[in-house]
Length: 89
Image (cartoon, rainbow, N blue to C red; front, top):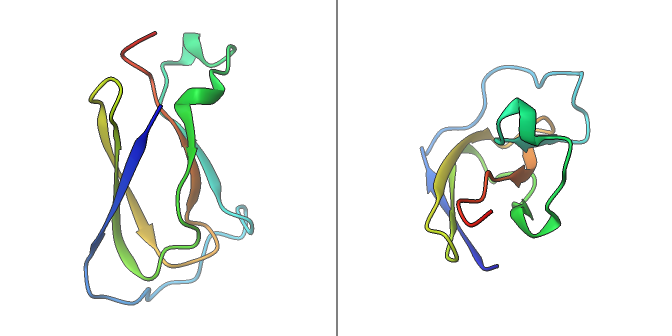
């Protein structure tokens, strides 16, 4: 699978402290609850971590066409991976 990640810059720096529960980033799983027991490694992708500043990552799977957006803030609690509900599976 090929993923394309685009950073959309808001032009702002973070103004609040990061969530201390995620000092090493977050793993975002966008699959439905009943599909999370089976991990399809090919549908999990690492995004640039941490983000340069506030904005969003748009992650597109070139295999199935699924496109998602993840908000980021350039802090330690930013997403570091995203697992997509692959339309091909």
